[in-house]
Image 1 (spheres, helix red, strand yellow):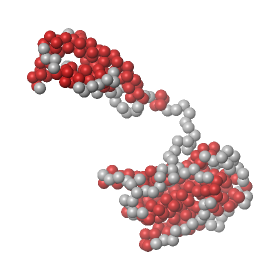
Image 2 (image 1 turned 60 degrees about the horizontal axis):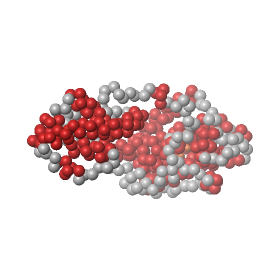
Image 3 (image 1 turned 30 degrees about the horizontal axis):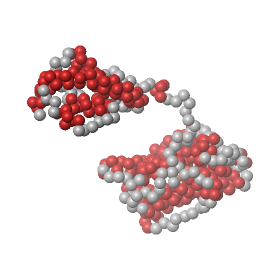
Image 4 (image 1 turned 30 degrees about the vertical axis):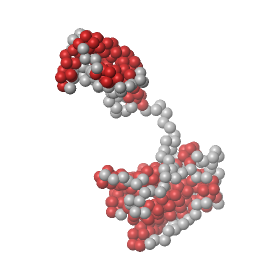
Length: 376
Ligand SMILES: [Fe+2]
Ligand SMILES: [Fe+2]
């Protein structure tokens, strides 16, 4: 085998350096496309490889040709063969190169991919101006899958409570109750007036917090999957969907009002504390965290039900029959002419869904497969 390779190499080197250079450069392109081996460091290619490359490029590859190739051993026939090999190589490269060029164009559009030819200087990273769309799509148009609620579903959400069972459940329930009672008292919700400004302040603040647990849970499970070399069992996508869904609640509320600097500072401080606490809590007990979020969502459904009652009864006159922002209509696929009531009904339905998801995940073992499909 080694002797055959040596003889073939010597014969092949009789080709003029110009022909060799042409053959090498042209066939390098064909090689990438048809995955057949010119060995650039050796400067030769077997007849079988050439024939294979030709027949692959033309779609007529026949493995039995290899046997026919090996029978041609005479020096004259070999010389003729080598001459014809150069012609074949050019023919192959002419056939394959256009495809290779197309492939190069496709590759150059993909960020971070090295040009397949390996020639220095051919790859150019696009400038941001060439990639960034001139007009950004509306908020929420590009989103993870999420439920789209029917009118019947929007109107059938009920306030519900899952009775705590066991130490962890009670810890989660009492934690949420303590947080709710203290927040209601300090924010003026318990005894204060529930007007538009107060409702908006409450909604915006709580939604900056509500988007944290899903992201932390997804991150911890993602990292656990990486370091334990085990699958996640499908929880991550549901938790990420929840995080984005809560962030969309915030984006929608921000269409109505932009908070001031003091509020923004409060959101930063609260996030700094809550993110770290929830991260550590999720490491210690995912069961507690999902139960905690389940009870938090029970409270969210109560709050949005109160808000819907206030809108329906005219206690927030600015929101009576007020058209929903476009991003809300786009995100929840609400019908044209949807109102603030419909929009908050969709948010309430989302919260009820999070309630179900988190109570379910808390009752499951961490290695159980997530029953919630993407967007459902
Ligand atoms: Fe929310
Ligand atoms: Fe929620």
